[in-house]
Length: 373
Image (cartoon, rainbow, N blue to C red; front, side, top):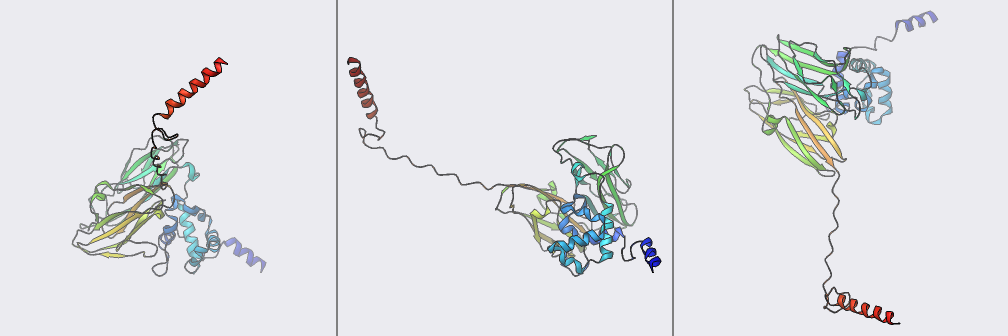
């Protein structure tokens, strides 16, 4: 019996402890179960941004299980995630753990781009990634920025050899499908020794015929930026957006939401918006338009930033960057008190013109009398 037990230990964990990082990535983005279950990414965001210390889950499924048991709001996940699923998610998180402490590494966003469906031989419009040094002191040495498939996903960048404190640079990526079917690659920021610091994923689909295209309508399409400016805490500001399917074919929209480290500070509402409560998919008919309302209602002061990203079986419109500044509410200023009405000219304290000269004359007489004595 003891020999058998020792043999089991030597063989390692039971087969139920799966280690499928690809399946773990899918589980992280969309949990199993009926619509409305939610997703890990809905609360934690992209793993590279380590919201709520999600990268600690790379230590293994048991740690994730203990976290689910300890956090009341996560308890419902026990009915959807067993040991194999938790092991897969841990395996996925282990693939995205960056080298070094997150606080001293460059911070990129968006860390994933899905270009959608494009005809082979064409090039999708460029997408931008902002790479920032969030440290108030200390440079970050950058050796190179590379794509794992420079043919299908070429990139250019303006990152310096040393990214200064609180500085940023821009990585521009594109998609040139080389063959029909799914294509994927990674882009990485490398240090001077060639080690990856931070990076992200690039995806697209090659097709043999022109694909339907989704597009943003109005000013947002031209600038790819929605700026709320300064919004007082306790107030609510909104912007109207329109997503258009101008082509002759219907499109299935699987994702349309705000992402990024500050995504929770914005809300996106509309018939084609997706969320943890309504994960999709949504069908957008040929020629249809979908009205959306983006809102920012700060409860705390500070800068907020996010990206509106979408995924569909079409040429995806580029993400829209969203920014706003939550500002302390202005305190009401005290109203100036009106001046009291002036009294008769000779009344003491009335502010009249004759009382001051009379006082000075009396003072001069008193001084003269004292000198005579």
